[in-house]
Length: 226
Image 1: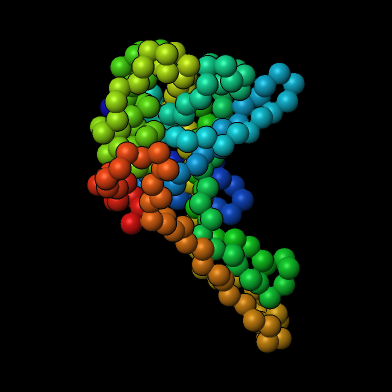
Image 2: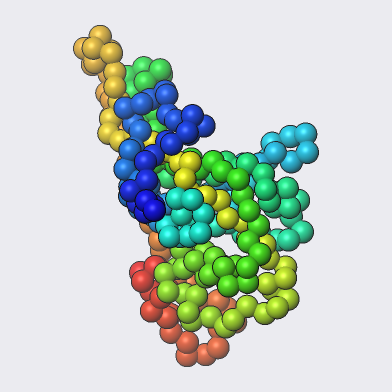
């Protein structure tokens, strides 16, 4: 079996990049690295007579049971969008904004970004061990190593939480970086062009007001928030 990092990108017409082909990424290892770096996914699904796109936390298991590995999202069992997603084809998009591009014309203003699209049939995770694994991955995606420091989830909490798995097989990724691509005449006019980098910065951890006295920030949180 082909391992997840070596599978081809854009394996179907649904994920094939046509416009801006020069920005397409053909390295699945780069896709996995990007999904590991970003925090928020947007899941799109048709609910009744209209589409719905919602932000959600997520995590990836490159060796998960689905074709190409597994992307997990979770939500309340009472959520209508989640109930409609089981067995349906969904689209998961993850984007990181890396800069604002100031062109010498309005047409050539742009943004620097990394963006991935995953399309596939979502399945509701029923196996208890896989559900616990997925929920731990989602916690650790936010704060690495955090799940091992927490008490086990209660039966009530698990009963209230649903997990969706989306195969990573159908995926594409685009990246834009650098400055504007302007017309020679606009450059010759002497208008300033360039780009403004954007960087995600995590601030120092802020203790909860109801922490017990004397508690220090644990190592897992310190590693994520200096």
